[in-house]
Image 1 (cartoon, rainbow, N blue to C red):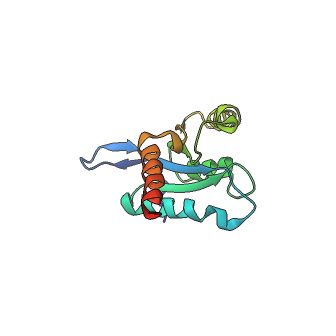
Image 2 (image 1 turned 90 degrees about the vertical axis):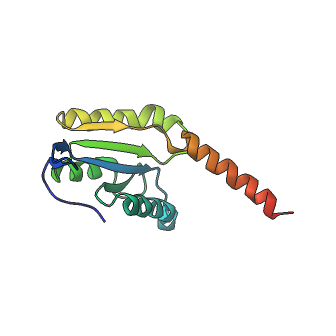
Length: 143
């Protein structure tokens, strides 16, 4: 599902060269491999909606690849802008302290590649609304 071409730029719809971007869905990880199934479904849904976008999964602990390995692969494949989307409900300790240090280290090792850390997905208004809608739907089904 990933585009592995090595060119650092790609033509846009108008034929202009643009920096190749990749999205990393970054999750905590777990010892049980089944835990990552919902993340794989999210990755597949993003890929289906944007087939030309490189979308990878990476994990903080317990699972592979870790963020550094994933990032290094993207750099080797010619990506020059990597957006890391934390698949966390909120900006807890890992996202306030640990992950920014990881991103800083990646940026320091690869100064020509932009590594951007997004806000936790659980804080996005659409995601909050989807969770609230699901909670209310559960109540409707219990009547």
